[in-house]
Image 1 (cartoon, one colour):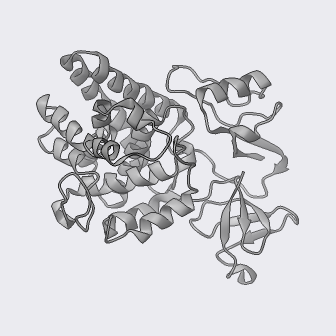
Image 2 (tube, rainbow, N blue to C red):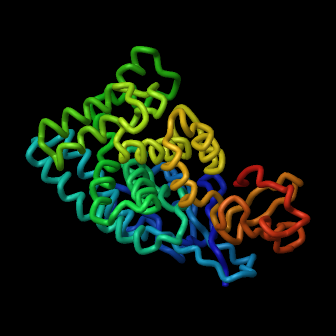
Image 3 (cartoon, rainbow, N blue to C red):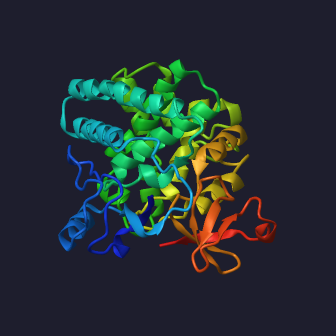
Length: 356
């Protein structure tokens, strides 16, 4: 048996074998299919689409353990969701209000399918890399935030029949950005105070759009409006505190920040999942709700099976299990299998960072 691991776009080489289907948001069929060998032309096409990288087979390193590396959300479902989200954004920008509202309501089916996948696999951790291998930030951010929010909702024990609203709000949380100038949204440098004020208007723009067109239940607009509020009252646009902020807004806030921190943006490089999680845990009680963060920590996978990491004792290792912060790893130089959680010689050894 061989395993797959994620390789960034800059490290891909001709002859590598694709380990998972590769989709873009603008095509119905896969750009590359599992088992295909990479060529210079394929790598160039992926670069043009802005893909961060792909999963590839590692045929020279047979897996010493039987590993389950199946993503919790199938590539087909991710593609269906991304297409629906792209259709929604395009409809809001370019169609009549009635047509846009019709498209938004069709998202219910996609959200229900996501809920089924997450609710039926409650013991499986969410890996941010598995839900990010797409080209357009706007669409995959909405998709990622929806998946992460539903996962948090499942961990919190929110009943199945209520999760659709949470997923809907998460998909729609940034629609107000459509009404912010694109040059501000994609500005590669630091925003001016005036530009930041424009960005801060997007929750109110989203609220107004939802209310004006009577989309969903009356509280959906409120939930979307408040996803940048903070527990200590320093958020925007209303400065709400604590439980005055709807639970779904508090959930979406955590999912939104985690996905944003781990995404490639014009103005910064992505943070590793472990660093993003540290930031979120450090902001408990100020920016984020403690119970929501607890649920999120229980669901997120920090180290992708098959990825390579640097340990604090300077050893390089490959991750063989996805057991939270202390996975089982294979030491690259020796081939030794180490359980970082149970091996007494490694109790003081920590994972420093991912290796590309």
